[in-house]
Image (cartoon, rainbow, N blue to C red):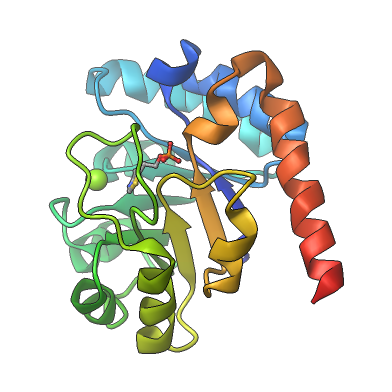
Length: 212
Ligand code: TZP
Ligand code: MG
């Protein structure tokens, strides 16, 4: 599975845009792998919006991951699902979605990350790395040291860092050992500028790569 360095996540409250409209803008900026995260809409409304988002993504060969909802992921045959500590256990999601599905799993400390590295998942996420306004009742901040410690503990396992990541701290998060960074507010806060902002992240990521 290919996991790009920049992993955008949609948010309809920050943008006041549908998931499908955000997917259009993110793809315009160069996104290849997008998570649809919906905490408020009804399953039916989320399903309809995600269906449109998927239709757009398929044309461009962009992967779509659904947050929380294994049922919607299965119904739409999206590429995968992202689960948290209180969602359906990854082992059950794997049984339902099959071998090819991409399954991601959120962790918030080293013990959870070590446990998760034994699950049938494709990547694990750790966070919040920094303070975030986006998640309700976020866990304690893990900081860059948390990312470093998780990296040490899980070896080569694919690691996504999340929470308060911006253009300004992107580089240090990668240097702490993340393979990829998941971003919500910094990408979406100015909805008209989503493509531009995404391109800024790509440009920065390229310049970091050249320096390494
Ligand atoms: N999980 C940990 S922090 C977070 C989630 C979903 C929110 C990340 O959003 P932002 O706006 O990039 O801080
Ligand atoms: Mg969840």
